[in-house]
Length: 172
Ligand SMILES: [Fe+2]
Ligand SMILES: [Fe+2]
Image: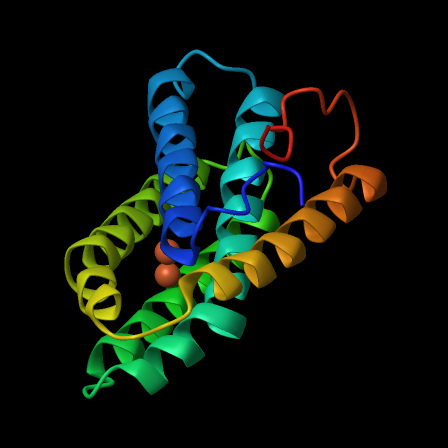
């Protein structure tokens, strides 16, 4: 009932996430040569958790709705395969030490996967879904709720230890 985000539809919510994760990826590229292992790990962990939460929300809410709305489901199938590959890489990164010689390469390739994937969503999937008749507001609300409670849990659980001031506050 507050002014907050109730007008934000599902696609806007996803676009915000894309922007956020892209920024993190760019930041990693910029700092990885001079950063400490801890700094790199913190940033990589942020990229991974942003992506995982986003992918979960898409898979649970947005993609099923898009499947129903679209005639052709190829785009959604491909998107799910892309999520799976990215998740795989996320799992590898999360199980590595940041001083591993392959760490930067893995994070870089994850960034490329994500970049390619969000670009396809933005250029192909979202425009098609937009044309379909979906209740984006209701879907957006649902997605926002899941996201906020997941973020609250993440903050409370503090799974990456030490000063988490960096995480974005759950949108103003
Ligand atoms: Fe996606
Ligand atoms: Fe996405």
